[in-house]
Image (cartoon, rainbow, N blue to C red):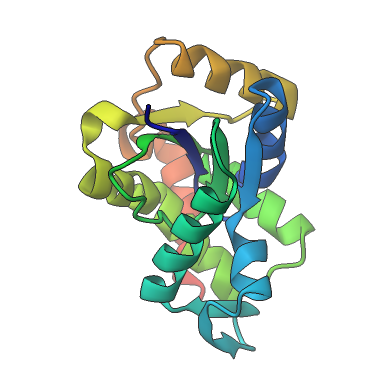
Length: 194
């Protein structure tokens, strides 16, 4: 029997770790926080001081995540990450990509004290759906669900994740068509001030 692996993904700041821990608890599953695994397992090439982030060695990350999943034995595993790891096909993988209105993401990352360059990079990635696109590329559209967490608290987001895992459809997210013209102009002004 295949082990269910639920990847909770999204750009930094959308709430992956908080939601992932709670989803794992609700499913009585093990939890893997990929950024923590990267640091502990030294699965990076170097630390970029200007962006305050580790530059990941993707091959070592893939091996590290798969080893961690295998080491946990049977049952469900929830993995939280902004980098979509390639999980071995011996597991049943579902990916839930948490999305957040880019303007809300900017505010959240500013509150966390992220450097401006990192806020811009993460906001651009959210706006164009980089994490969702990568998840679909690796696992196919049938295994990937998007959820809009804008305005939701963690408990509501967890509830939404659990419903989608039981078969409820996710959200269709296209920030370009859903944001107002005013909000798009505001976003472009912010992103152009590099």
